[in-house]
Image 1 (cartoon, helix red, strand yellow):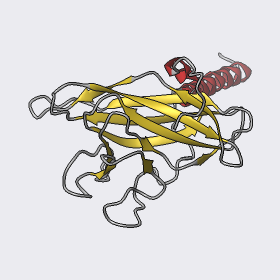
Image 2: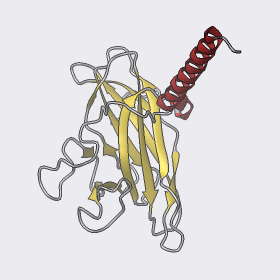
Image 3: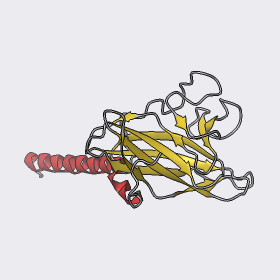
Length: 220
């Protein structure tokens, strides 16, 4: 007969192994900027707050026209990934979509995740780059970090993709950093849709997506 002490020890061991496995799983998700539970750091992340019809969502910015709110719930056109009827459109090489400012702390790693899709009339896939712009307490730029160019899947009526392309980036806040804005810039004039954009702590596993540092600081 198995003693109670042995059964108790085996139970505790199994619970410990299970807890360790769950912890490692949660850490891996956070490292990929995909935690199960996390506080959203990005203001107006769902594009729901819009002061005036036809304008950008509150807090969001762009370099030029071609960046606008689209979707079934907005104008009956475009695409939507998360079911809320809204997504951001980005058109124009040299153009970009910029997030609202996110408060940050020096030395802490931050990550962004999102999804992109193109319906290029050229019927070709394109690419997108993510740029982190760091600012000090006086709102002065102190550092710029770029990701590598990331592929954006092509949608066509004949062959719609099974999923949107993930767009990811992660960098550590430099010394004296107090806030962060993130830009999404296309590599071509093809139209791109962006949805489900999130900013969170973590993302160490995404460090491999960082491009070689640009010696020119804080390009605008």
